[in-house]
Length: 371
Image (cartoon, rainbow, N blue to C red):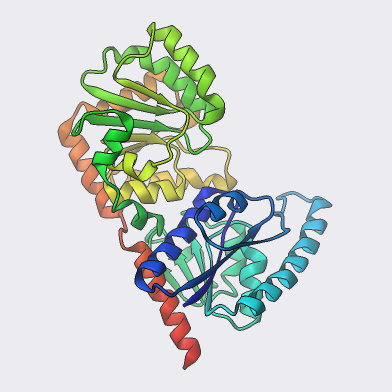
């Protein structure tokens, strides 16, 4: 199969597309790929690292208030459609998949105008602006959260597949996770991470909370600060604690996150959709602190989905303090029965075969076109 992938802006849009590519590679060794992303997006750096052929178009997102910049965005969109059509005609894909971010707009729209089968994937409980627009043109809309199909009333075919990123973590080795952290196998691990870039509010709460933890009580805290916050945060913690105790592992970034997640007993994190797909695939209980600085407050909507099912505790940033975070963590980590119950609820929400479901739908679209 020849497939064009598009998605950008954040890892939450990029990694699901990569997961679909990896699944198709596993199922069909002769598959060919082209990833079309934005010139300035994170995908321009991440996708080549995944050894996927990459081409870029110049595109920006719409501002939500009236602005002359939106006129320029419309012009870039039209030029992006033209450039995408040229790339599609040259590559001749069997199918095109968009996983969100404004770069998908011209790519998927161009494919639909050329009669190429298209699928868009929505990671969040509240759809993004680009996917809402594209749902009128795509052959299939795939959603990550069961029950959110109704968010696309104009879609021709809306299906629940989960998030393909979930499939990526299921094969991760917990033993490698423990080894990479220097923690004995079977230890209880609380992972605290504020997204790939870190989160100032979570860092502040951790600095307040860590002295209250005492001697760790046999629990290892793995604290990922984000690279830009690492030096200042580590210095503040060392001053408060009089050093760096053996139960506290302060890191700027984790490059083997699937393996670290595989050995995690409880996670404190934002509520990005791809991360939630990973933790539910592994059945990890969570304390979720949704970012308030995202479109349509979609992270809180994501987090509430897990909270309703008993898989997570939601702590809003406006209520976040070191004491509040400590109480939330201790409530779960101090009760084996509660942690087991939350883990089971999390596991029930996991869609571990998500990437295979998406690939199956792509095959159906290709076969339908050939009839």
